[in-house]
Image (cartoon, rainbow, N blue to C red; front, side, top):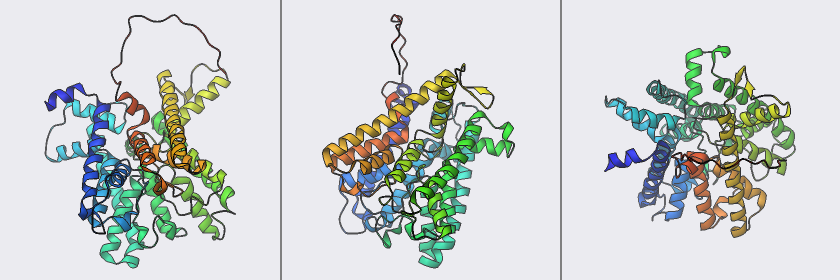
Length: 447
């Protein structure tokens, strides 16, 4: 029966069902009394929301992670974050490899879809690189965090905090345990701490770089000319989306949420505010205290997100770059879209337009529904929905003020954002239907 069901389902459908299964299992575990810090179990909706947010590496929460969840509950959350960040297919294949099992063609195809690579060749080697690289990077991040946390919390607790926040940052999840000082405070306690800020930023950017880019960098080192077009576009976007937003945030908020901070503190605050919307969810400054321009810039960065095949969400940097290059080519009346001496396939442009339109449409539609039901401020609701669908986790604090309907809307957005808006739509219609009859063509006016 399992084999028949497997043959009938596409790779996209398997990924969608797999994440849904993990979310439901996590929900049941979080509803257990042992998961609570206080006596009694957690209600279904709060557990479902937290499980979805953790598995979809988002970071939106309706209860404070430290104050509400016990050590067992926190462990369940961080395990879901790790599985959600790497992908359950990657972890499953790794377990099979450790058991000495051979990876069949069907599993390789599923792994290809999960990692979001273009070719199936070398996919097992890439999986090994992903797992080894993840363990190494998260381990280094945990040690760096521990340097700060152990003197503050003690050996065992400091080490645990280092591990938890390293996994959360690398997987771009945004869950934190700083609620013991102040609920929902994230990393604001360390706003001017160079070690904590740079460690978190490095983990976020590395996790959001993309596993395919890892392989290219590992193979070709610093030889930029040898990189694939994908890697060149990702690294270009990487540099622009770190430098430009950092400067813009400083210009917009130096007299706002950054006011009163030292020069180095303002730099760290601007850098963190530029990096974390893509799509980590941590914050060192008050998101609700930002001006409208700062919030709008945050939403734009949320929409862009990280890179394909990474732990980050969003429509992805390559999607935005393809659309921008296409617009420039159309304005200049060029034939096709050329980037770094290569011509992009027309299908890539179509896919980029669909992904961007679907993600934007879902965020706007969800914002309308939440505003209509809960009547919350539009700007805050827009930031919340952009945060959910792009699996960011940043919030002005209205998550816990939403009702049951709005929370279900946010849960659906997080789920769609993790598996991809286009993948979610294709999960229901993934088999291409060919028609023997084509309708007559006719033009319409555009623009």
